[in-house]
Length: 327
Image (tube, rainbow, N blue to C red; front, side, top):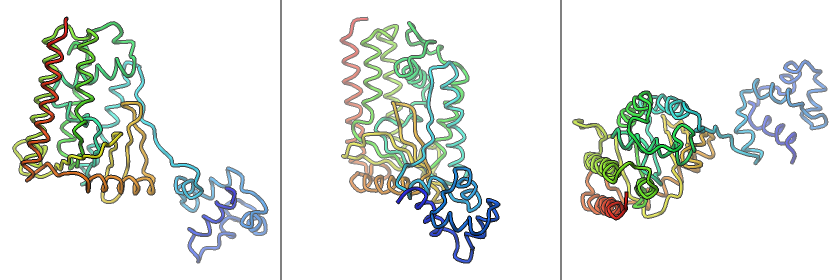
């Protein structure tokens, strides 16, 4: 079946029975009723403009149409560039998304191959390090060429936006699925910068690592309370430990049953879709992960202790490796 035939079949399947498709198309395209029938019999193909007009008239989502035809799924690609203001622009686009989820009573489900970026933003030095690392090592930004890490390299506007992102994420309900490998990415980044001489001193590397240690301790408290809000009894945080490797950061926004999925690409960029079939498949995958995971928030004291102890051991091992380096 070619696209023309699939398009016509889609119309017949989705336009209400009481509506005469031929009459509607004849009036819409300013053609005779006979010409409309020829299109519906596939004797005369729809032009691209005609197909677009028909889709708009019958309120057909082209993403659904393409999925039905087995062609593709539409994604929006959120990409960071190496320009000076790219990171700030990216964060400014992300903030209203997170705030909107909270305002509409939705939640975020985060399958975390790496530490969810919002947790880093609780500590200014750690946030600066992550932004510096992403800008220099991933984006190859010219503005940091030949420079070592310094807190004041990060623009105040970026510092301000990441604080707002951290606060917004703390307020929204979230479910996070971690593995014991989730912290390793940031630990490797810190050690790589130390090994490649991109800290000014061994002490500076340890300061960043200590912020990461404090972030981890704060996360343990959040898991114990089932809340990301300090001094609050509101339960808005659920944390799981998955023994199944996740393989990629995947975020689902669920707002009263309306879902969006973000898939990480090339470290920090992301692809976003609201495609119903893709979101349903992703939700099934997430639920399968949860079924094979251990709940470590709220009452799971033993499992929580064991999980975080392994994290602290990994942090200590990284500190020992830094100590062995010559600066």
